[in-house]
Image 1 (tube, helix red, strand yellow):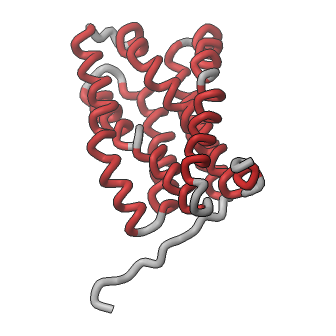
Image 2 (tube, helix red, strand yellow; image 1 turned 90 degrees about the horizontal axis):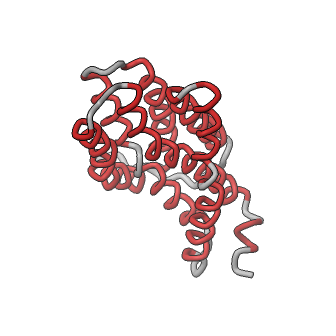
Image 3 (cartoon, one colour; image 1 turned 60 degrees about the vertical axis):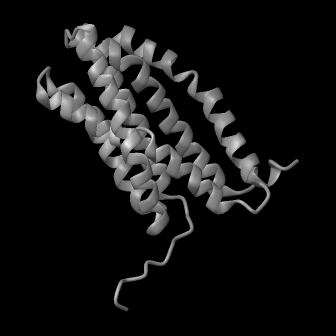
Length: 197
């Protein structure tokens, strides 16, 4: 019963859709990137491990920073460019080759790997009434887990039909779709106080 108001809230449902699309992209990224690095790029286990560590480690550093920025200014101000950059970086992985640019791109992708999802959760909490916060996050997590679990299977079909490298276009497409949906969602804004005024 507590979830019914959430289902009737278009902003919450829209943000849930954004989270689902982004979650599907992340699931695919974390599962298939190691195979891409080993099978397509030819990296050994150590270099692959280093690159996956960058993909996750930079996100651990950036998440509190981007979260604080979204608290201070505006959620959408962080989410929109974050999704756009993430989609572009996913495409650039395909073009990067095996050199230093690939390392830089994967580290840059990591900057947004966790942060955007956490800011989406914060955006949902901005919209729900007091006393329903845990219900909202539970709904978001449950829906994301249920739908996101199919993402690696979709990626398998893409890989078998078109090759492993195309899984990054799949990630870029999901992230771009999340961005487009986000642009149409009305979200609460924060007024920015300019120092000295």
